[in-house]
Image (cartoon, rainbow, N blue to C red; front, side, top):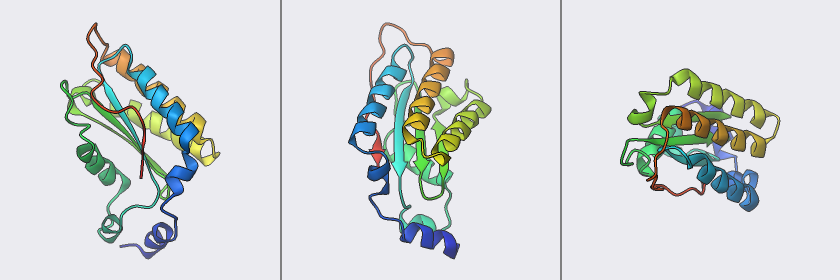
Length: 165
């Protein structure tokens, strides 16, 4: 366990995610997710977390590992076509991860996900949380429309509203 990382997380208020991504932005993110899912068969979840749980810090687990756990906990892996995508924002570590289910990761190169993450991180460094989040959702929606286009039946299997931890 790195003490400096532990202190950063321990001293960060638990309400950081709800402060940065308040009700108005959360509603905009939910609407953007719904729009991004139109015309394609993927399912998108957006998660923002302030400080990590103590167990993650104690075991020095990465934001990527936390994203993988949340991917499972939120049931993003449990879509009919294995078409779930999780955008995970770790505010304290200044990290963004995109975790895609096997149905999508077989079609979308990791470099495309990484590019979306870097764009979001750049916007967040400039304190543009709204712009970064909405642009990322739009980009992911475009990738999914390109590689996983929809048909007449496109059920909404996951909630559109963001999860703020």
